[in-house]
Length: 251
Image (tube, rainbow, N blue to C red):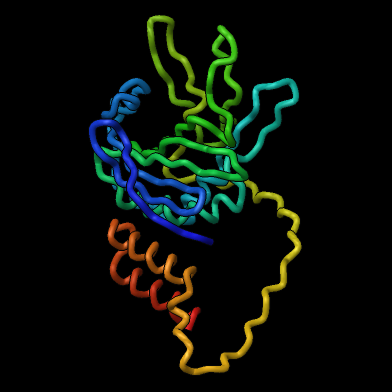
């Protein structure tokens, strides 16, 4: 997998650091930005950074289900197994290092379709607020306020509620889950895809040939690992260990 990293701007007032891998962008955003004020996120007391394990993050991701609001709409997983494998570790690190006044924003591309949202923790809970799922935004389809999809509540989940003069209303694109995820039924196993046989490597004929550290894929992975370390998403010990594993795999 090709990996890269960079910096992009978040809210208009303050440049926000962002981490990019192939098809996945992760950043911290100020809870008091204009967009978050409009959505009432700024009124929530955050409990950041959050101590959480990667296995719990995976369980949360597996529990998120949505339902298309159409005649033949079915319930579907927000994140497939491949998505979770790609993002669970980085999201765990993001939870563990997010500043107290920031929230986690992400964009995930799967088969050309974007899933985008914000994640943050309050006391005893994790909030999952989606702006789009698999390329479908939350734009209103009728004057009754119906949307193209809604999150389907699972055990231990509830909708965020907003209150105005007309009463309270459930935000069906925003679920609040218990910090400790509820146990879910195991997902059905996906059909195994045909494996492509990896080309055999010819033995080196010249011992003076350039070292394999010149391999572009290795260089990109080492650079990505370095970027994680510089952004404090991994500590010194983990950085050294992963760097050694990469080099051992190529040398």
